[in-house]
Length: 452
Image (cartoon, rainbow, N blue to C red; front, top):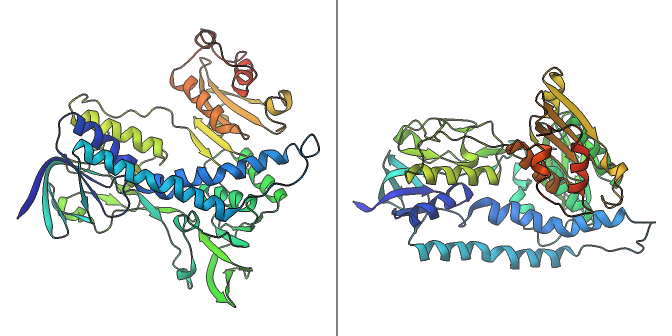
């Protein structure tokens, strides 16, 4: 028996879905959201928000150390238990507020696991719900190594909810999550190890800057073990022993598996609806339609080359809202997508990668801007702060990589220039605040950027 009919049903309530759900409800559509976990999804509850809140004090301590011997004396430390209590107080209410907003708008929330009966019908807790269109935004989850002792491995979600900080933490993997958490844990006072199967960290980012980040973290006291494949984790006298295939053994208090994330496609009944997927996620066309024209997908669950980030998921959600409300029929066109790694120091990139630009010297011009050396007073004593940029043959900025504590803000500024194909004449129409790294960067760009 059909419980209820809707114009659109969303599977999942994270950023990939809820923006569209709100916009479509405001446009007069009948909307429901199926959610089996916490309203608002991973980023809001167990990911980005919690991470950046906990990172705040660590970032402050990191910057304080840059002034040791030139104006700062004494030690400041992080009280992890107090910080975690603050995190719970700040982050926990967010999903309740969003749920109130959904209810006030008239969006139905269906609690439980959703499974396709066919391309128009979802089953939740033995009840069936019909929709003209269905949007899948189930995201990803942490991968877990299939090794002896895998039950002792913790995920990013576990780490971000630790009531007390272990004395010694070992991270498996040297990707974004691992290095961000390693930097945070070290600043909070833990001894930290990072074990990586490959020979380098943060693959996909500019190698010059990833190597600098690793060296900086080593200098701070974090140990890295590259070319090591973890083969087992065992319980030893109340602690854990991590063993690799080469025979490396590390005894630690806590182990985090940060070896990657996998799409949540299982047990959705996608076969019942004729929706194609693979190990990388759900297959979609340039309108975010799956192999069924009335079923769409958004966010990290999609098989895509574009970076899997919260802003990307939000962009896709807003696009689906326009599509299903009749405001557009055009294919989705992604703007330049900026990526940031919140290590200490930070790195970021956008547009054409520096690696790719260097491979085509006839097409791109690559320049390095050592603004940390030239503008030390603006970079908070961060001498190594640096930006590498790529210009096309018409002298438009098309790519950038940033190393330094202000990388998130600088990459946003550079992303705007790339996205809008801005010239020097365009930038001269604004008067920026001084002194700042942004205006300093503008001065360096003027000599290479298209005049107007």
